[in-house]
Image (cartoon, rainbow, N blue to C red; front, top):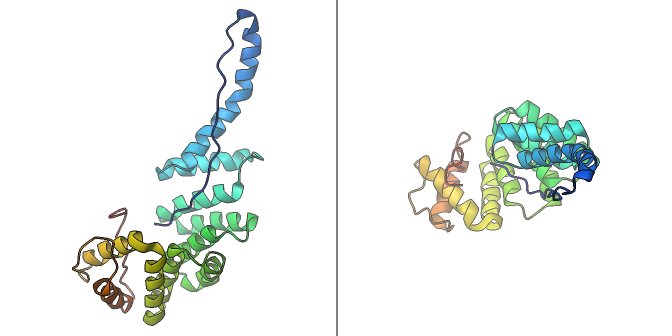
Length: 223
């Protein structure tokens, strides 16, 4: 899973006016507020866990083209949702739009590289992942992406180095993911404690030597 961390704007609503003589003004205020309420709902959906609602919410923000909306983030969030649903071509198109608006966007570059990898177009994603690591050299997920790509190209030694870097930067979180995924594949038999060590490294080494082996667990398991 590839996640992006974004901040979203909150919305504060004013209490309704009480005096009857101000009903007309209150109605006008409500009419002006409706677009803001719709935008707030779209923001909430765009950052939510439900992928279909995320796509709908992000699409609503994109279609409204509100100057207050960070379209680079919005396209990246929708692209990630498409990627998680396996719609890699649509994901890549959204990441294209995000990167066009913000060329030095390490998370979007990483996620576009991952979408290329998952779509079987590994070499197309190599410039993206190299640039993502250059921009954010401490990203465990970027090193994990490059490790998968190098493994797919048959360079097990380089893949193992990147898995090791992902472990270094991702610490217990990445260690537990690898432990979980490698346990499913019958390669690792140690505890799922998030502590890296020789047994986990040896399991990663075995996995990296097999092009079809993925050390990450399927779906949301152990995440």
